[in-house]
Length: 399
Image 1 (cartoon, rainbow, N blue to C red):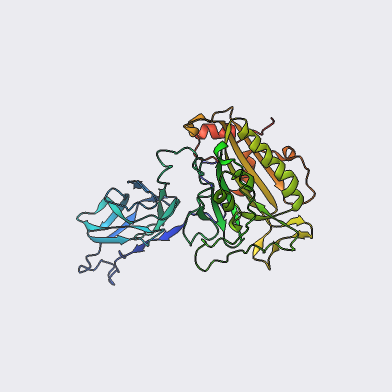
Image 2 (tube, rainbow, N blue to C red):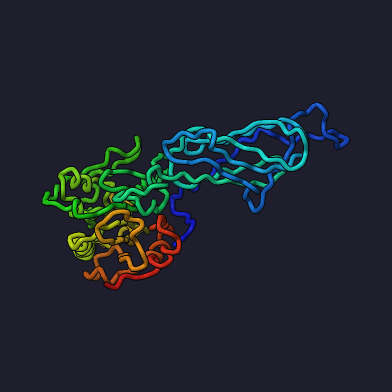
């Protein structure tokens, strides 16, 4: 459990304020020039955080900011006069404000937000004002649906582990909504960082495995699309994140799992035995009356397949991970899913080396969510109450 966590490729982006107020130059006698009407002030800051900074409004991707979206800052004014501040635009939105200081001393200014946020996560705006040290204020952009009213069966019901965002600037942590699952894609690795999905009985049917591996043409323009044959002769399997077997109710659902953005280079023994057996075990839970929220991911560099140890394949375009992990939250079928997780809820977590020399029994690799968080830097199950996270993320499944 972590209240705030920085992940690889994190969306904690920093925008530098464009400051239009400048310190007044001194005359030779050391006095301020009488014809300069620009106010001189210092931001009231402490340890890099704006003293008294208040962020108002509601920040959601796709929702334009209005008059309620403001940030309030304290400044110490040393000369009366006009001020005008404008931030650079960060993930589709910015802040600005102007006015006049009629008196010296401690004052409050409000910067109004404009634009439409594009990305989830916490965005930090850095300010330097007058002679003050740099300080910052943060704005958290939350998911339209999940922020106030969580919706059952949403693939990100329990949180966005790395604050992935659907913007091209987030090339190492690019959020993709595929309908049947949600993922964070890493352009430079050519694989997903993690994939998250909901699994229940309605997902399981009689559709046969489609086997139509293909490049994902929904990636941003100019990004390399890993082709279906990228793993050929590499010694590694095209390892699904969301298994084909978890999406057998319709043909389109099954075909969605064969996009190359859902694949990692996985050691054949791991993929075909240990991992497959875990996938079968989770589907048995579904057939026994449970619904699951599953997150699978990989990290590190270097695995051992049929051709020995390799760090990349496909001429270096695809990274071979060192470890593959999965977390599954199992709750009995029902409604209001976030409220039905408690200290007794079964949370299954594994972390397995990406190598042929693995034990066929997946249960020998069980670990805690806390341990996976420590290895990846992600914040899993972040939508659960903090006190509950402390319990369920620390335990290791033994059933």
